[in-house]
Length: 495
Image (cartoon, rainbow, N blue to C red; front, side, top):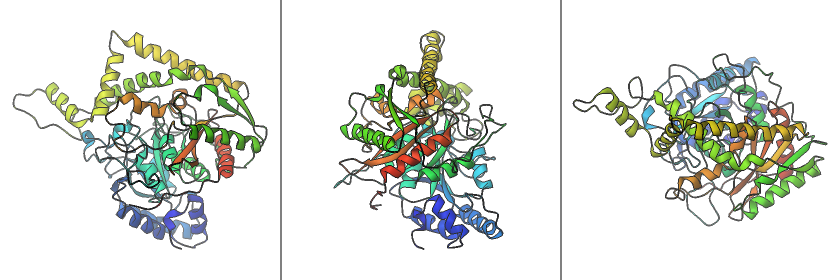
């Protein structure tokens, strides 16, 4: 079979079990595609030898009949997950050539289930960005292009490399992280599926931290079914992570029964924002009609504190980042600035951080340090925490009124060009997270699915937000919507 790289996880799983092809054949097809994809800059590190070795081991397991769902499936790993003996740099100079001596819980779960690691994927530095332009590796490039244009587009951020790799069929699926939309926005920009699980569903141990109360890892895939399969392996209770939940983990794939009759779907009035494109408003309305046609009850809802979500996020996330990134001092690992004669330890710390952190990371660390400082803690940080509680209560009230899921746009626009936002006020870039940050602030599960193409031929996405710990129901609603939308477009190969 040709084009093995284009298979979904579910298709590859079936073919592997029927002995139609081997994991080694799929893996080699992906590696060949990666080697010819330099223009996309999706992979920061390719682990070809490791991938071949894992594929051969997976083929042995399959022959023995010992084949979990992900056995033999080649995946890409965002450069934020620690992988033993493989460079993990968080796309930052300050972690230059850092090779962990341990494996993150999520990636260990994947390898235990026989998944194959193709390599590490490009991202925004320390996951701070919405366009993958803050990376020390340079920007990842979206495989999609607008009609009659050669202008390179962003794949979104921070999980831009993951989204680009999945959309371009460089891997069968990938894993990313989501702090304010970093899985869902790139998925929407690239015509792929991305789910952020409930906070605590997936272990954060071994994932380089940005904002600890917001970060959550999740799958980026070619279909909703694939997202359910990959999430099943990623999710686990982990004693090494104090925020990991011991909530029971259902069979997410089994939950996909394609039946949402009687389910109540909310449309938040506050998400109809000024400046949102008519195309996105149209697909949002179409999505609501499709859910109605499937037997759901669609109602308008209020989330009154939505307007405060972005300012709250951009107080809390930088505050947590300033604390988390204080550990990078150039002493124990990673980059260290060259010492100058007579320089003390504090000067060395300062120069290492100045030279090692990019401008966006420096900006957020400075903001975070400011809002945590003695004179401003109550005025900014504590107030933001209180408003975060109100945002969560908005969702609690809606769900207590019987709403099962909430339908919104995933992004306020289609993918924009590389460099388009570079010279603008950074707040304009932050506005890309306007539909996604509330989900992280409230700790809820959210999924983005491709919903259609813009007049420029670029993907547009819809987002579904679910009740906490009910990823199964959320995935099933997304599955119904995916089947109704029938999105099958792929980017035309130019790279």
